[in-house]
View (cartoon, rainbow, N blue to C red):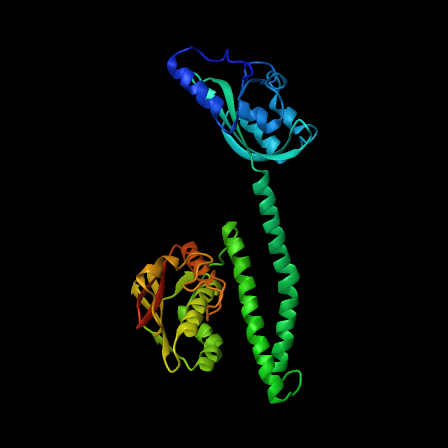
Length: 364
């Protein structure tokens, strides 16, 4: 093992020896700098740091960490690091660094000040992780979402609009055979648009950029809007939609997102309901600060051992390639996320062979 600068250790006790060996064996790159010296030089670097950067210990000790940035020092992260060191506060950030051979790597860096008994900063500890693979994966995912948004959703919207115009007769009359084929195409393009929108919604939710447009409204309007939209789907399956509007009050929420949750829950209930059954949508106020929506069907129900699959992304009770019911596996996960963004609760009760009741509550 190469000899390293270790005179910063205040003693040679067994305890310090164990700590030193632990740092030497760590898989994270670890450096210690001395801000009491000119230019805050590195006074210790563990073997993992040498492996990460390609520099030998003798090429590291005595240098400022900025040498890893080469001429790429106008990064926002670099300015943030300088400010954190100036203020003597910890920071975690990701920045571009370069190995000895010139290879770029993304460095997830955590810097923490070390203080003596009087509270004075005597060292900084930097812990490095190469997150290049993660950054590249995130970039590819972002490119995938971009393709979905611009290369798929935009033309699909136009195709769906044209098919709808033919279906409803706006583009002229067609015979029954063509009408039947157009209806199939409309149904499938609608399903594909819903899948694309679910994927993009989930991406926004994961990124923490999903914003609610809060306003006060009568929740009965949301129920009526969704029933009107899904009535053709229900009639095609021979399912009745029944609204039970109990005494209630106005709710302060994002009406479009409440409609989205209701739409998903009711569409799912229609999908799994047998012909000549009904789906009941109930609106009530169990407390003066609570609005409760529930959607009850007479479908096959959900076994207890499958309950943990609900509200989890990309999970379906039948995930086989031959499943009879379509879906992205994102709908209920998105519903849960939207309800929780409102500070509410969502859940389900079900009996196998008798049906299921999905519900959610909005407070305030």
